[in-house]
Length: 274
Picture 1 (cartoon, rainbow, N blue to C red):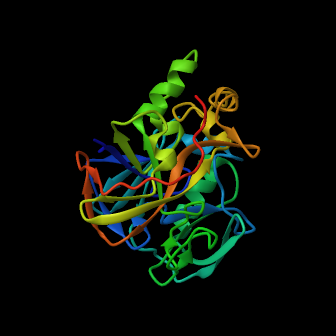
Picture 2: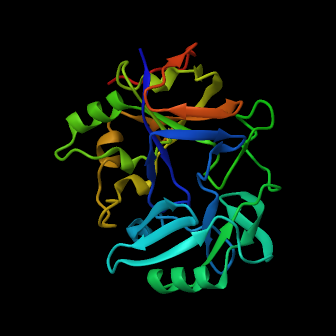
């Protein structure tokens, strides 16, 4: 039996995540997940891949918005749920471009100061409909400022197996999943196709290729070689290192820790030898 054991959102792309006991599934993913984004002077997305210091910015949900804390000096700012400007422009995430609205002058100044580089904070409004990678979409599904898909699914047993191969175990936050499940074998998520959580349909569409971001300690912002060094020895396929399953969905509603994954179907994608 597979059960949801953890739920995470990352309201501002590439900043700290928030663990939830219950989450709302919207048309583009979990509510608040990656609806905000930092962009550079060219309006291109910023992530820990290039700026590891972004790991030092932690996020919490407040009644009035997002509380952001810069951990080295405990400096804080609250980002309102609704932007304070009407300044709209296109932003770029990988090869995708979509319309965003700038949050506020205050936010731009604060993030530029703590990150020591010019940047702007933007929000994805409801009328922006950024589509999932069309190679894997089925019905024109949409997502937020996530890399390409609304959800990332990982099984607890997969991390347990990886940690058994490492000198020092790593926490799940290195992999930034949205849905974590308990039960099953290591890497059970690799071959999960359709499944249901609380009457909401989900479908695994492709394994997730992992990047240098997994090597960044989310408490210190320091890079290391793991887990990519170890994963490359047994989770490499077509020159990509894979861990977790990208997921799209059908329907909206509430999912909670403890919910069972039901109506599970499997596909024939080749398993990795572990």
